[in-house]
Length: 154
Image (tube, one colour):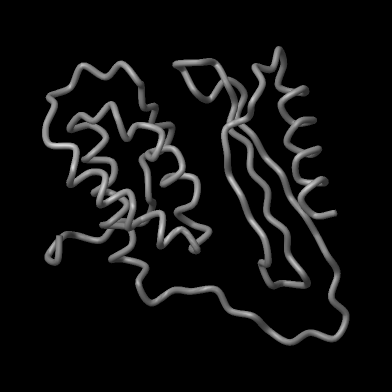
C-alpha cells in the first residue's frame, strides 16, 4: 500500500455492504488487524463513518470488504497532511448538525445517524452509529438522530 494511488473519498458514493456477501473468502486476521488500526485512527472525523460501517463485518469477511478497507488506506495516503486545527476565537457559539440515512443497512433495515458539534469554527465532537430502532419514516429517523445528539451534548 506504500505505492498506492491516493483518492479523494474514503468510500465510494452510495456503496452498500451486505452481511451475506457471496464474495470470495480469505484469511480474517489481516482484515481484523487493519480494522483495529483504523479504529485507532478513528480520531479523524472524515473516516469515522466508513470505519464504523466496515467494523460491522469483522466475522463475515470477503474480498469486497477488504477492498473497501484498502480504499480507506488510499484515502488516508492522499490526506496525510490534513488535520484538525483549533483556532482561538473571541465569541464562540456552540453549533450542532445531525444527519441520518433512512434504512441505510439493507440487512436489518436500521438507519445510521451521526452528529457533529462545533465551538465557533472548531470541531469538538462527532459520532456516527447505527440506530437501535427500525424507523417507519425518514422523519422518525431524523428525530431519533436529533434526540441522540441532544443527549450527547447535554
